[in-house]
Length: 316
Image (cartoon, rainbow, N blue to C red; front, side, top):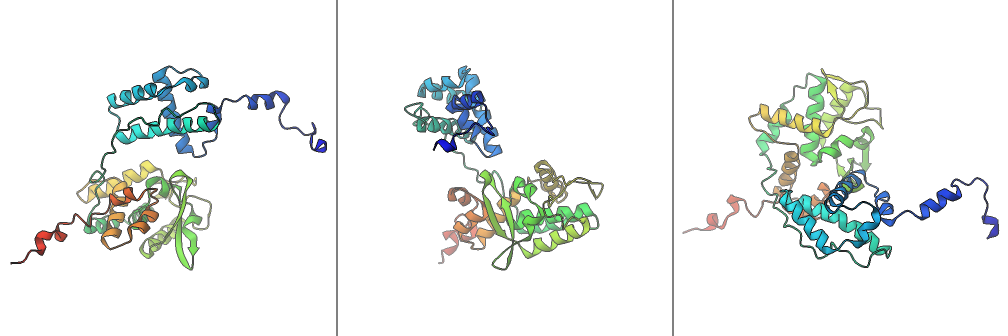
């Protein structure tokens, strides 16, 4: 054992070593958050709580009581934040206290038992469009231009695979070239760092190939699949299209057709269409990357379709 103890090639000084040993568990918890989006959301939630309570240093979290949490929750409600936003902020704080419990820094999690606002129903808030409108969107871009080819490929990718905007923006060229059991797939980097593989729809595949052939970056495997465009020319960098760019793109073409929707409506349309055509809801959940099947059920309108009402089963 003594042979393992050496001061040669030591990366940390004795002072640095001791400094890390003295890092408060609250700071340790935050440093261990791997996902950037989660880290940003949790940081915002904690800053809000610290501003509300006047906490100045990490150690003060150890004297927080349920009364502090309830007062903060009520303050969030008074600011007219959505129920989901409040629940997310409470979850962030709860995650910290669960870690402190594991480290025996506190005896209990004060967030537990705090009543959270009811989750609003999102049904109808992101409406699906009809089949004829979806076909109209796919035909809307002018494919005589490079930008038009790109836009049509993007719309097809969204409508046939139900991707989130961020997921589409993260796609690399190599993600479009995946194959599983002999079937072409798209590799999707989803929420929370989760990866899923979705079979590539032939209609979308053809449009993406047309775009890549015209754009000329089909061999740049590590480059962005869908790139920013200006004056029908791809910009010099490999910069991907942004989520805001996707939003504006969908709004532009839908407005041309006489209606106005956001990009998430295309995800809702794909999910609703799949379920209407008897896709298994558990498979749709996996396809969408939902952690909870209750979220997937929002898109299942099969029980509420007027044509299926018992009214039309009555015969005299």
